Amino acid sequence: MPAEQTDEEGQSRNARERVEVMIRRYVERGRYLLNPDPVTVEHVMAGLARNLVTHGRWYCPCREVLGEPEKDRKNICPCPQHHADIARDGACECGIFVSEEYAKAHPAVTEDPMDKEA
Image (cartoon, rainbow, N blue to C red; front, side, top):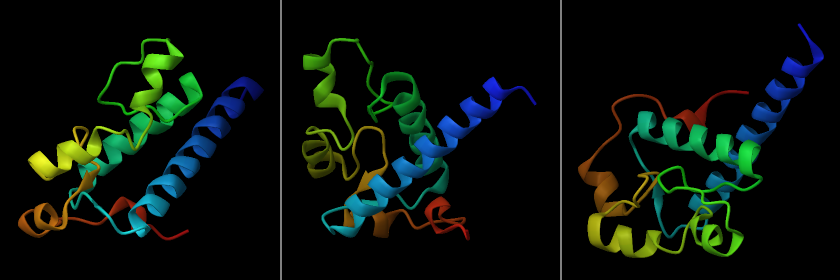
């Protein structure tokens, strides 16, 4: 396998690990829960990791990265808008963070991707 592919894979793996740590820490603070839908969580975490590798920040994958630091800063996960989104809809726009009420109304069907064994 060429070294370039290995470096890219290593960057992706490292970005994914960093995203998982950030998400876990945020949820542990207790204000919101992780969406009980593991597919949504997986897609959002993959998008966050991809943005971390591509743009150097974990920009919300549900929002466009413009390449303008002042404007893009407000889209770093967890974005400031997620509080209003959750208050209004029970979930943030990308769907990774939800209210307790939302989580109770939408129970998990399959395994949580954050609970995988090392």
